[in-house]
Image 1 (cartoon, each protein chain N blue to C red):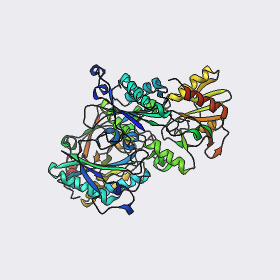
Image 2: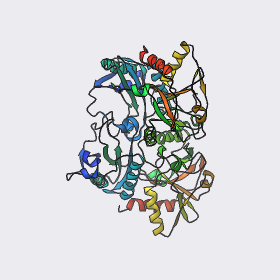
Image 3: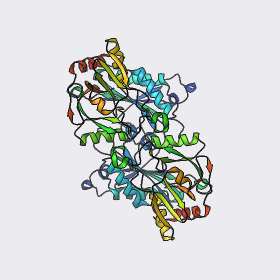
Image 4: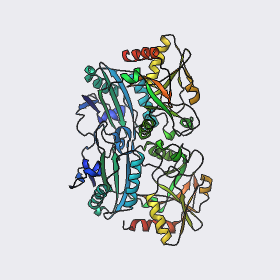
Amino acid sequence: MSVLAILSRPSLEAPAARPSSEPFELADPDVPHLSVLDLAATRGDGVFETVSARFGRPHALDAHLRRFARSSALLDLPAPDLPAWRSAILAVASELADAGEALIKVVLSRGVEGGAAPTGWVHGAAAPDFTAARTRGIRVVFLDRGYRHDVEQTSPWLLAGAKTLSYAVNRAVLREAARRGADDVIFVSSDGVVLEGPTSTVLFRSGDRLLTPGTGLGILEGTTQGDVFAWAESAGIETGYALLGPEELAQADAIWLVSSGRHAAPVRELDGVARAVDADLTARINAHLLDREH
Amino acid sequence: MSVLAILSRPSLEAPAARPSSEPFELADPDVPHLSVLDLAATRGDGVFETVSARFGRPHALDAHLRRFARSSALLDLPAPDLPAWRSAILAVASELADAGEALIKVVLSRGVEGGAAPTGWVHGAAAPDFTAARTRGIRVVFLDRGYRHDVEQTSPWLLAGAKTLSYAVNRAVLREAARRGADDVIFVSSDGVVLEGPTSTVLFRSGDRLLTPGTGLGILEGTTQGDVFAWAESAGIETGYALLGPEELAQADAIWLVSSGRHAAPVRELDGVARAVDADLTARINAHLLDREH
């Protein structure tokens, strides 16, 4: 079962034009809704979020909407009407309440080429079973992202730090990982700084501290990592940010890739080298992420 | 007027399954044909070509189809059935014969997420009027592409050299150019090598030679530049490849950005500095490009 909400055109334009009617309509996900001229399809020209939900409640919704707006700004898209998007996401999540865990994709494209308005939709479906990744763990390889760690500052037109629809590379690296016998990837900058996964944030434990690469590295602010840090602090675990290279990361006591759908996936192999998984802390983190109230 | 041809599913799969029926059908471009789950729209996961045509004849079709196949291979997409694509492109071009100059977009996506087959379409429309760019010229700025000049060799998963649907950066740089009072961009590698435009090839004249940055720099083999070189050689103009930096390019006697739609656009301003336009050679090149028989 899947559910689709299409944002109404006024809710995609300036807030001044915001209608009093519903800002979206539910639509049949199994029929075509997009023009072949939509810039999402012809140029990957738009932004997205993937929001997890459980029993009808989306997780980290404020953080996702904040990042959605930030990505839109980096692409010079019209500022999204966040209340409209929120109501569409809540409606889709609600329809999927019986699915247990669900994944909701939130997409804003620049619209049909030469047209006047963006295109927006929210699509949700039951999540796949992530149990194996969350417990047994995943095999990860380091791959060069090609960019220096400071491109977000020097070259903002490269859109580093924006979650754009131009994800062909983020998918190509997963095929490269598979060729190397791995499941996922940690990107390293061309000058040797650990960045993020193609669809996840790197988290690691060093002694009794939980750490993640800092912001400003052209990487996404992790919505799930943010919730892990908030929980960790409430549980008395120290958190922090680190600028480090792959060799230093390999020294960590435990490593995870955390993301909206899969939550915390412990790294059980890094560049072909087996690693111990911190089963207890992994279970505590995932229990918290699954039980979040929002 | 615009024309849409949608490739039939068998023609997108293995050649063994190739049907004897038409490999495409003409469709109404003004109604939706794409699922919101198509990976073209959600991940920019596919490849494309833009082919110019005049009086119903596509230009450089063999070179476009060759590059289309090469891009597909770099993305691990099923090898396109080139005769099927060729016939679809010819049909679309033929419908637009009365339009004079036309632009034809050829798109292959990985298809609906979780589905079994790619999606493919060919869309054509009358070209905009490029006269001003072709005669008066364009203002260009250099912008960092972020990658080293050798990423095609070191990091093939970055897909440098593939013409993918993930073009958000190629569009963002045009907005950055506009903020700088320019019309277009020449990318420079992070280690200072002149590469290409976001949708064009750099061509320049040094004395009586026509030159272009070489292959292997993670840039596209220019289909239009290839035709310019073939013409130049037949006209007794020496051609060649050059690895050079932006300061050296600025010393050239004339610079053009050449591309399928706009053909040769002389650079009349580079990073804010006015330049002489070689009006005679520009006119000869564009006359040849417009009159090509194929």
